[in-house]
Image 1 (cartoon, rainbow, N blue to C red):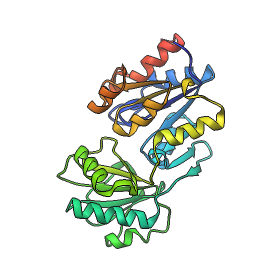
Image 2: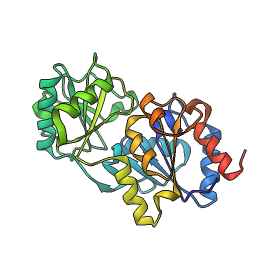
Image 3: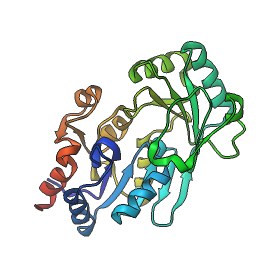
Image 4: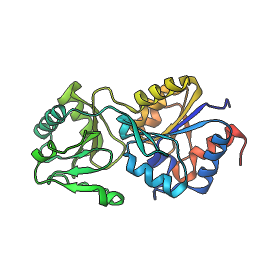
Length: 269
């Protein structure tokens, strides 16, 4: 197998085990790759603060594409280097349209450093409790004094794939819609913002071609990078749409599927 210049990997359900930890085997594999000259880039729906926690726990630093491509983050410097945020007026129009199409859906605004919930949104991220704030009403969401990295739409009763289908049909080109497997959670970015868009721009800056990139993912929001990269691997635990769309598969996140491929590339064990 040809050694890549860059390894792009999703986190939840891909690089990390289901308890959110990075296994010792996977950490060794990443270090083997970086010691051999490859750059490892995290490409995740998660905000920068989650990547900070991972870096603190593992010592892994570098660059992360966060919030599905809305933010590019220097992990060591803890600085956002590039951002493509959702305009407030567009977020309001999307929320209004989804509220009409899907009564009972609640909303939250992710800024990258904090997440703001309106009362109708029952979603919470237990590992980020100190960064979570509740505002008095939906109207107050649009008054948050920070750029919107992502608008989150949440339903306690509707399937996430259904949410995605209805959003794409009812709101059209107002925004970019995807999901990363969170139950009833739809992730909404500015039009054209994807993991692959941010990753390809990052690679262009480094002079790295798509053919020199290997990517790993498990959910619909990963499909853009899995298709863009010269080599893309779907995890065994991936969403059915990902498994059917991506030719190469590796073991599940619980079985260190990313490490398995890296070890084969570098002859490590």
